[in-house]
Image 1 (cartoon, rainbow, N blue to C red):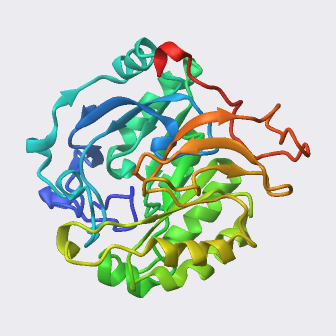
Image 2 (image 1 turned 120 degrees about the vertical axis):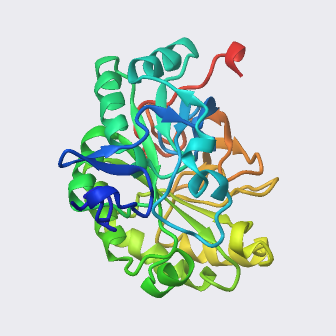
Length: 331
């Protein structure tokens, strides 16, 4: 019997092991092997995930499990993505308990990150059901290498999604990620953009995919020019730990040219970056000010919007949900 959660469609008949090792066949059904198991849960700034156009300034309950359907040679989180689940899982938390933790810690929303969410999709369906009943928005990070059936589930349970688009080239994905074809990912990006708020993240590996920045920018523009695009200089680990770090100035020049297609480009995983601010696309004034924390996101320090509009020229800034800043006691 074949698994239908991701595009690998692994045959799990007679205890065969799939690529991700997170599903199994039981009595003619594909089941999670580790439901309600987590390696991570913590309160975080939503900008650190990163989501820059979703409830800016809000507190997020970040959760994650184990496993991945990719084998990225440069993965900076390989110990969670490719490690043995039995050795990694630290917490067993029921969906109702996840909701209680979010409420107790003052989290406005919940985001599944750390590893690929498709590895725990049935658990997330149940979390989503309870989160909806409590009016808690649910988001996730994903590589989008899912089947069309799973994509439909994503669109139904997640309100906001950050999709990792590593390249437009199937050759890149084949060589550095381990899948044959990028087309399912591009298909799912277009599908999810119609029903969810999406942001896209592209990790840049020096001299390997930096030349694709203009084309990726144009692809995103062809779907919706208002989609926020997070670009970060990958500091490779795992099988590519000896690769040079991308040059900040070189990437900045490429991204500056790309702003003609996409007004909301962010480049922030280095200290002192000014690319983490949201600028009004019309008057170019800062409408949301952030500081770069050195990771792939940032932290909101000032939000100058008035009803999601630029206070200078009244241009509407595309945000999912009203903006909010933490009270001082929460910072």
